[in-house]
Amino acid sequence: MICPHCQVDLLQRNRASHTCGSCRRTFALDPKVEPGRLHDLKFRALVAKSTPDGLRITVKQLYWINERRLHRFPSREERAGSDLGGAVLVLVAVITCSLAVGIGTFAWFLFGPPTVIAALLAVQQFVRARRLRADVPLRPQVAFRDFERRVIGRWREVYHELPAGLVEHPPNDSGPMTVEARAVVLCELPSVASFLRINGFAERHQVLLVEELTQIPAELPVVVLRDLSLSALARTVTVRTALPGRRVVDGGLTPRAVFAPAKAVRLRDSAGPQRQVPAALAASTGWRRLTEQERDWLTTGWYSPLLTMPPPKLYALAEKAVQRAVTAPTAPTPPAIPPVETPERTRRRAERIGFLTWPQAVADPTADPAQAPTADAPSARPAGGAR
Image 1 (cartoon, one colour):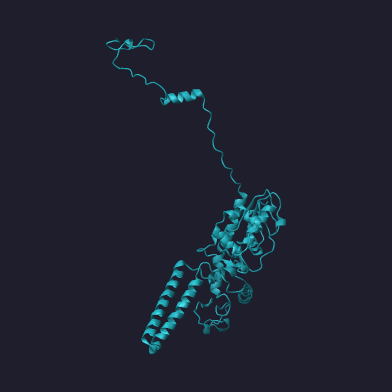
Image 2 (tube, helix red, strand yellow):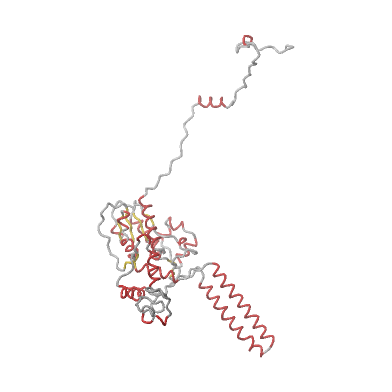
């Protein structure tokens, strides 16, 4: 690791007891000692990257940011490469084993070790390919309590304060509203509500941030911020039912937003049989809009906590939901009814296009106007006359 004070690359034997062997100064985190594979420079970089434009985050958000960093979000090429490597190694093991069997007993001393090595490497490649599958859930490598105690606590012990933008103890209440609220944000997730409070979301967007359904005042549109899970979707339907005649905007994600190749935290509760969809949720419009793949994803125990989103994206998601809630839906424009046409207007339009009219004779410019036949004069008899 690199010393955060003198920038010297230190081997493990040169940084015993969290002390740099070059400058003899103490640092906070050793990736070989503290959980999370963090050192001081990486810790500061994670906080700085997650707090652009003065944004502030909580310790729990930093924990999930680090878990996302530790988790491999594989690409299709990586999985295909592991499968191909395993197939080649299996072929090598089969060939060497066949040669040993065909030649005789003493050939096992020559071809036996390569066969065993190739077989073990093939198993390793197939196991790696299985771990690189997109449908493998994220498994946290560090418990949050250990991260809070051994990483955050160690940082405070050495530097006495957290980096700018990281808040360890966010307030439980945003205080009284100083402006008239335009909407209500119902967030029954305390960690997400804390994130919004420390960034002044309620004051900036003129909304009332509440964590319980009973705290929602009357006559205001409501935004529901929720996790992505079957129970959270059912809870949103319950909120809609409890607020008849009110505009309720679902501010959560859909499963398609976290499907691979999206680098989202996908967790799975595999305990128990397939979940039953509540009747109210099954009859809702939102559930019917989901695809069959999305419904299966939810009913088989998959979920994604809202707090695991990158903080800038989570803040933008809440902003867009509030904008949808306070913007009145535009009524569809009725089709224009053409005016009723009178018979006289119809006759004139027909005359303009020559419908059911006789062609008019074109006057000869060389003829004498005095000898021109009038409309009342009988037409001239054709030459020769009638017999």
